[in-house]
Image (tube, rainbow, N blue to C red; front, side, top):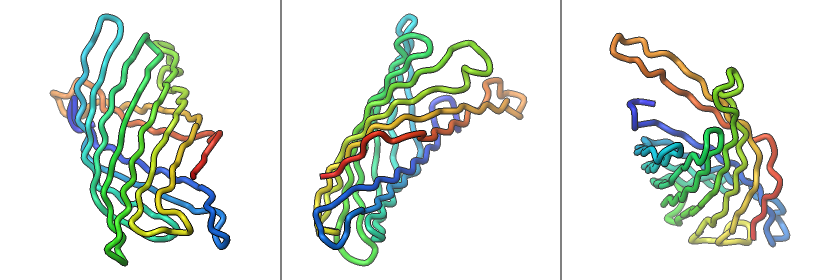
Length: 191
């Protein structure tokens, strides 16, 4: 957290999927992004709504081919009741492979349910995360027999929040650091 509504956020996703090509059964794809994230929050009685947007540097690795570029994400998060949050997001990127003029443009959207125990230390610093992601990677040229792999995944994870009290005299609000770890991925499929 850089300010009340400005964050720096990084994401790394690793996706394995099967292809129809006879010489390659599994393709490993890594998507990495980092960039500033702007958030606007609004209280609606006991509920709370956050809307956010992010501009990112993107790095995509598909079958050992590296593509770099830019992208962005928009999303909304609603805290329905204390301890239950729902998040929806959409991410798009434009990347180009370093060894050719071919593009790889990933588009993903996701839904996330976050369950925590509010106001019960130390448990309120942890949350159970159920995450669904769907999307497609548009490729100019086929890699391992596919040019537009459709990817969807359902996963279960654990979120931990770390707080650091401000060190400057005017800083009253603590700095927050968050770490999400996937515990299990129940279904990953690409077509």
